[in-house]
Length: 358
Ligand SMILES: *Cc1c(COP(=O)(O)O)cnc(C)c1O
Image (cartoon, rainbow, N blue to C red):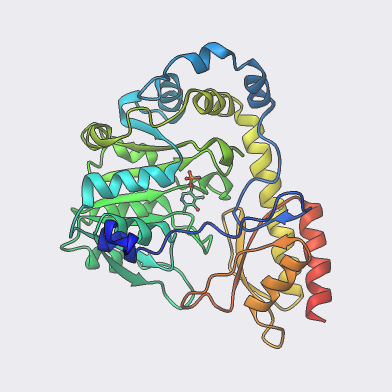
């Protein structure tokens, strides 16, 4: 008997989203492949962890994210009803496909972008239209809008993934105003940008705008799985109807509230990353690499042309305990995406790389 007969054909064909190699535990490695924060979360979070009592686990969590929603609303100047929290923004992306795009619905995404947008489309049997980035990897937002004439949604990551390139808030606003499609701006990396180009404040004006944020990157809480989405009341109500009954566990709600309360810690960490990003990019360029000017906590870069290819280099780095990301995908084959770790990790990475390329 063929066991796969039970799986729906479109799920059988689905390429699972793979977030990057999962290193065997126990090895000393530099994890520069998943854009995690290299420094610990706020001491407020560590305190909250210690204070987690058994009562918190005995009871159901607030089904809407309760206090966290209030705290996010207060922090970003929106009402609690204009934000929804979930088990990481990855899960919110699935909700968005389910609520707003659906079977046969069309979503426009740039190419390249975050692979989960493709994966989620396949899961919900939605159609994806890819708009190629320009040769320099910048995104033509007018082309996105044009491709969306009969689409239900446009997804855009800003600063971009996996490029790190930043669009201005004005460009994003123009895009959202020029289309009747839903526009979803994924601002997972915005706190690392040199200038804040967030469009969260525009949800008050634009009924077709959703903005995604996560605690996984700048707040150093990737393991807690907390994401949120901002949007007008009507859009958030749509998502609420299909969310899991308890989309965010009580422990993670507490940790996220604590992380959000310590803005100075988050800003210091992001500033440290920006400085390391600048010095690391400079050192790579001096060694003959091409480096896209990133505004995220990672750089997309191309090893010098005479060197071993990017895939081989990634393998050899891995043998040395350094994990970076290589995408076997069109236009990315010759590149590596390297997360910005501690300055010590990046210096070590440069030393090992120059040895491997010698
Ligand atoms: C890391 C990342 C996220 C965050 O995902 P979580 O599920 O919240 O950890 C979202 N979007 C992009 C583009 C990312 O790179």
